[in-house]
Image 1 (cartoon, one colour):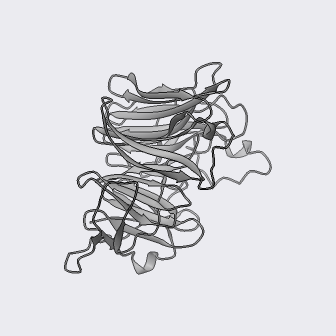
Image 2 (tube, rainbow, N blue to C red):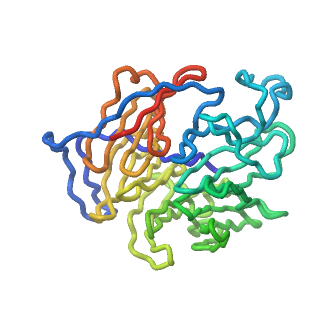
Image 3 (cartoon, rainbow, N blue to C red):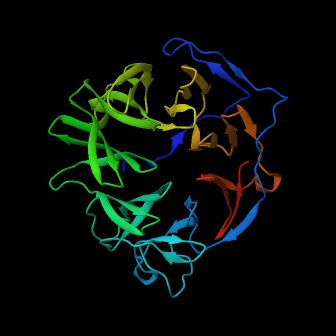
Length: 370
């Protein structure tokens, strides 16, 4: 997969700065000290053989197991945690019951990765660990109510098509796909209706050299925003100027009708792009983070720095790339959410409706944000 499905966002301060030049006019947001700040709820303690990587309201915390048995791990690979007699390789595991979800066509050395949860659906990318055969990545969907699983996508035979982005929203799965034929780059965004398995190509672009193709996308309700960059971005060639590689962001309706140009600029790295409750967030990883508030029609600059970020509804969590800075921000109140004192040295992650604080070994803490 082109990149892990995580946005990058910079440190948010108490004010969000107006973007000048390329974006719509906006006003600066400033915190009101009289508002009530959201808080992290009661801390719960947990421990499991495999760390939680996703949360589902019906199943609880979920983890994954490596794609081989402990005695099959080649020399030089990290050792596995101690496993019980029920251990099954390459599966999604429900941590509270230590039970496994089905895995169609299990393959030696493959394991579920990048697990997504939304409503009644789970989706995951089935990836090779680099042990044994590598037949390309595959995408699977699992219905929590019916307990049925099916394969959503696999690379076509004799094709170099690969995933570049995935978004799961309720019954709808959105796949960003990229491949090439000769010197031509082919990109497209596909919508999959999981309840009917119907697939529709929503957008597609192909081109060579400086012709713009789709680099990234994010979905918000009935809208989608696409980032366009020159085809050379995917061909190992350079379209960089002294300012970087040109890009533009355009918002459409999912049915294809263009709404507006959101932003344009230059970037010297790949993007990370996501949506929150109120709009779209993008990071160039070098020149900072910008945010488009759909309800207000504003493009705002939130930081010149970059960090790893996880967004869920109206909460944004970030961790510094090159330092230990971290924080939570509520887009409902434009306020910082303080971390509990006892968790300041842990590694936080947002998993659905909860926040996880990872510790060494198999231990972790978790809480809801209220």
